[in-house]
Image (cartoon, rainbow, N blue to C red; front, side, top):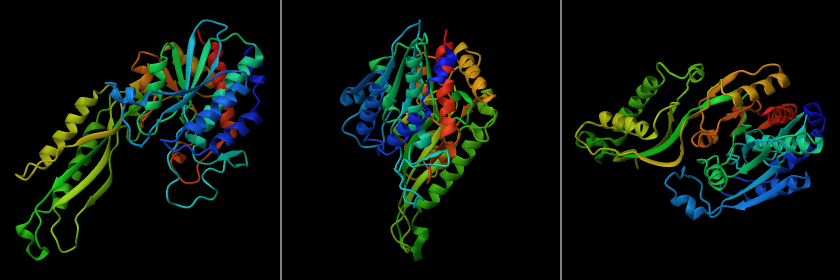
Length: 404
């Protein structure tokens, strides 16, 4: 029956539907049209389709709210369900929100959905609309083949890029799963560990003075430089003697970056204010509160000069780390499915935040497996290999049918 399900995959339709989804702009905060398209294609494929408007106010009031960065007034997601013909219940999860196209010119329109030379081009093609459609077509193929399978729910979620509110909402609505698979672009590896990521901002104050009398002032930029150097030392310390074996293999498992900086008003005035925003990588197994406190202590030590302190503000997405043991039966099932598809199935950890951790936090074993191309996510001229999307679909078919 596995071979029958694989033979039932309609790869031409997969490419068309993926292109159509890329053509729907769905920058984080505005995902409804994309959710509607997924629900419509699910219904056309004979799956049980659902379009869900989540209670945004209730989610924001929830004590475990995962944070947000994009402005929004509504939260829409879609589901596609393969009814059960065997025991078990699996979640497939992928996000339909994308980052903006940026400011640099693209070779093609960012939302062209162009298909050429075996690739699908456009924002979200690799991260991760193509994989969402691959998962949908995997379920459609299983349905057409008549193979016995557990119930499988594909969650096409919004708001992953700014914190994971879409998956959080989907799991608040329905979390009775035995396992989960997220087809993020993992480089054709089975990801069992993901770093956490926290966003922070701070304001460093100084004392203004005329540039010709700068000794009578105190430069906020000079104070910030001490903080910046201390951040670099903290990054080195956090990444020394990394405990998790999969994360240890990465060049930089837990990056610390200041990505936005502004300060000063005029070239002839000692600057009295610097604002900065950044991202803190959080080790697998670490506590978010402790990670925040450790970085605040770094700032406090750097600014121990008698001038006003800088209290970090933690806003935006709060990605906790997450992991599933590599020897867990579900991880091994997915690994076997990937190996049979592409001939290799390495286990891996990733330095970026993902919605995987929202499943593992609920005790649901979850792994990620998907195409190559993470370096093209969020970049100009994003694209994905159609052959690799087909491999992802076939890997999902194998994993679902081998679930025990």
